[in-house]
Length: 228
Image (tube, rainbow, N blue to C red; front, side, top):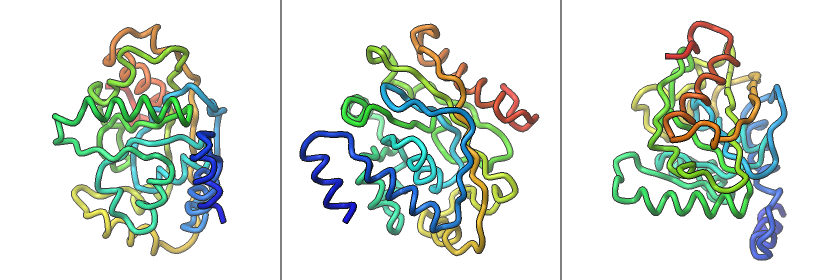
C-alpha cells in the first residue's frame, strides 16, 4: 500500500512520507530500537553523519526522512537496495571521477525535492572504534551552499552491538547484509543530532567538513572520536 501512495506523492512532486515510514519499519524488523538525541531539522538541511553499516540508511531515514548519498554496493543489497531507490538515494562510485559533476546536480535536485539529504563524509564505513577523516571532496554540493541550507552533523552509535553491525573492511555487500539481518535480538541505535550550523560561516568544503567532524567527535564524548 505504501509504495503506490509514495509514487502518487512523487507524481504530484510532493515530499513523500512513505519512504521514511517504510525504511524505519525495515530497521525495526531487523532489530533496531532508535534513540534520538537532539532535534533533526525537517527541511533545507544537509545532514553529515559517520558511517558504520547499511543499517545507517534505514535507521536515519526513519528519523529524518532524508534522501541519501551511498556507495554503489548498497544498491545491490537485498530489499534495502530497492527501498533506498524509493528514497532518492544517490549511488556513487568513489573511482568515478568523471561523474562528479552529475552527482552534484543529482544532489541539488534531491535537496530541492526532498528538502533534506544525508551524506557520509568519511566516504566509507568505519568500525565504530574511531572517527575516520572527512573527505571534503564529498561536500561539493555545499560549495557554494544552496541558499538557506544549513548543515546538521549526526553521530550514529550502535553501542555494544557496533562490532557486530559494522561493515568489515572489504566485506561484500551481500555478505554484510545477510550477517546483519541474521543477528538475533534487538540493539539500541543512538542518533545524536548536533546543533546545526550555517556553512556560510565556514567558507570552503574543508572548513565545513572540519566543523562537522568536530561536532560529531564532541557528541561521542570518548577518545575514539577525538578530533584529528
